Structure formats: C-alpha cells, structure tokens
Image (cartoon, rainbow, N blue to C red; front, side):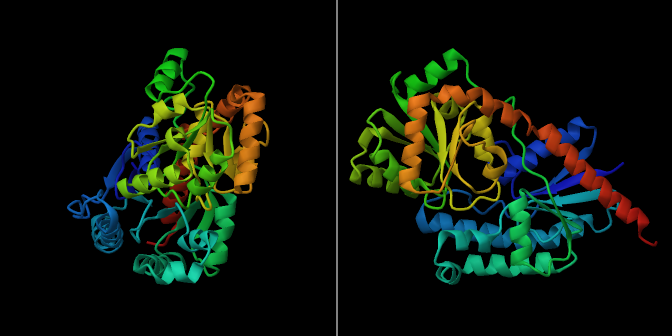
Length: 378
C-alpha cells in the first residue's frame, strides 16, 4: 500500500503552507491512505525559535529556512532512500520529494514589489533561496511540480526556462465547515467584542507581511472613507503591529483601526467583518481570499494568486488595481449596495473549492508517480 509522506517545517491547522499540508493529510487519511510527516522536528531544527521581535525574529526565520533546506534535505533523503512504498510531497525548503508544491516564486515576488536588484542583494536569504531553487527546478530531484494557479505556472517557466520536472496546476482548497457564514448570535458577539456599532462597515485585512500585502494603501483609502468604515487587521509581528499603530495615529485614524496581531483562530474576525480587503502585490495563491468567501464575505483584492480565478466582478467582490482611489471607490460601492447582497455568491464560490476535491487531484498525481516507478526498468 502506498504511503504519502508530506514534508513541511510544520503541519498544523491555521494558515499558510502548514495548513495546506494539514488539510491534505486529513483528506488523504479519510480516503484510506496512510500518511507520514517530515517536519522541522524531524530535521532536528525545532530548537530554532519561531517567534521574536525585530532582528531576532528575522534571524531566526533565516536560520530555520537555511537549516530545513540543508540539514532537512540530507535527513529526509536518508529516511526515504529505501522506502519504495512512499511517495513524498514537499511543501517548503527541502530539496527532496517526488512532488514539489510551489507555494511562491521569490524572484516574482521581489519584482512585484519594485527595486528588484536592491531587494535581492541586501538580503542574503534571498540569494540563498534563489540558488537553492535553481538547483530544484533545473535538476531531476522532483518528478512533478504543482503550481497553485495558471499564472504561477507561467511565471515559473519564465523564471526557470530550463525547468526539467513536469508541471501542472492544482489550486488550494478551503475548509468549508470551519469557515462558514456566522449565525446571528456569533456575528453579534464578534462585533460586540470589537465595539462595532450596527451601522459600522467593518473591513478585514489578514496577513503578516503588511507592506507586501498592501496594508499602507488600505490605510490611505480608509482615511478618505466615511467615519463608520472601520478596519480590523489580523496578523503581523509585534514590530509590525507597533508600526501599524503609529501609522494609523499619524493618519488620524485612531480607533477606526484595530490591530489584532497574530492569531491562531481568526474566525471570530471573519464573523465580525463585512468584507475582506486584500490589495497584495504578490500571492502564490492567497488562501485567505477563499476563507473570506467561505465565510460569506465579499472580497476587494488585486489580481494576484487565486483572485482572477475566483472573484467575479460585482458578483462576489471586486478586482482592483491596488490604488487607494480604486479601493475607496469599491468600498463605497459596498456601502451603497450592502455587502450582504454578495454573501450567497461568495459562499457558493468557496464550496466549489473544498479540500476533499483538491485532495482527489493530489491522489491522481501520486498514482502517476507510482505508475512511473513501475514502468522503470528494474
């Protein structure tokens, strides 16, 4: 019987890469497939902290990436070298795995933010990552590379024109049971906890990298919107949250911006909000967009990641160019029309992207790997 081993620094509920691996693991097991994990703990790097402030946090992050890319690669290859019953799916850093899931292309992200050369050169981790992924894509380590969107597939081939593994597209899924429209009681409780009045329009922003995901532009738009438009910001390091509070004060926004910081379970904020605003400069997928849609929230977002595939203009949200002026205009549209008018369409969109459906596509990839092995001589 085939075993699927997933490789990621962490595999757990929440958001990001670790949540993708977690949900796939659940669905694989529901389908009767045995699973294994290789995480940072297995790479003997769990002594490196995940949290901290300022340079300490950045240094720890760089060390974790470097450790998992090097020590992790050696140890995971050693573990599965003689395991012909295992198909490995790698999600991050490690240069190993029959299948590699491309959760983002560094060079494309840096170009999207501007000043590409300066951003690359000033950060040694960027140079390390680019060199590591050159080895990954130009070699024969992976049999298949999974991209999350059609655009990401095109960007990967442009960035690495000599890529050797086959590529295909499988989008991420969303837990439509965990993320759902709130009951009246849940919504009332969530809004009361944030001191939101009935007439307030609550915008939600979710993300740790405030600058790349467009939070400064959202603040600029908010400053030109009516007083009853509020912003809830979930995510960000302690340093980033402190900077957000200073920036909000400087713009005269005061209590209109509530900075929550990191949060393991953001569902209460989805319940309290009326819309997600997400003008990111680059996303490999942008799972928070699907989480918002599943929660019945219309989405105002730039054309990055999954947005072109899931947002229908004026039906379940709006695609914007990332300018404060256009974001402001679409928020005013929501005020006039009422965000609840898009809630049902938002939910229907998310239901078509369940994790069960996504897992079935991955199982087909695993079957392809198994069949390819059987066809090899010897």
